[in-house]
Length: 219
Ligand code: URA
Image 1 (cartoon, rainbow, N blue to C red):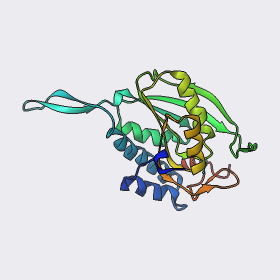
Image 2 (image 1 turned 180 degrees about the horizontal axis):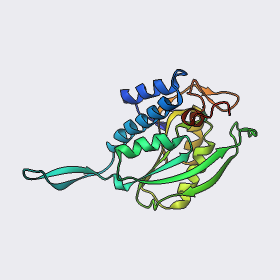
Image 3 (image 1 turned 135 degrees about the vertical axis):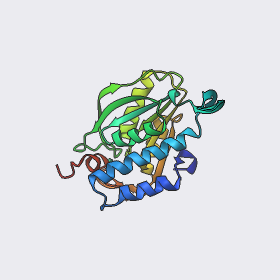
């Protein structure tokens, strides 16, 4: 994997959130909170690249002008379920963004020859994405199977201006998989970790993001 294959969100606050997310000391409620915080910081980083316009504004004292970031041209797609707190944070920073959801679950009982898992996309509800910046958010980019399935759904939904695959933690294999399947998609992540283990979990990673966020570890 080359460095230019991925955009790393190097913001120190993003890295600080990630440290808490990685820690086994972080309980479910704190995990959700920090995933939300991370989404907020990623939203701020994303705003740097969005078009902005000058608008008129009336203060209690005078007429003046202000800046508006065109977050209405952003479509945020949550990959259920782990992305829910992450996208809630993104929306706090980009309040006019439109949202879509899709559910994709990987069948961890069947690993394919290329190391990935079959993924079933069960539910897709996306806004009109024509001309938008679409951000497909999934905290963990592991084998890339789920992200590729999500990007296929976005591809069928319309003609966006640009598409970002945004994760908190990614594995080199997942980045490569997405780059191969969708070379035009920008892969953005807070950290690129070392590897996948034999169960397709990212190492060092942070464990199962969905289970940690929703308190279903061991169920
Ligand atoms: N999904 C997760 O939640 N964690 C991983 O490490 C890989 C996939």
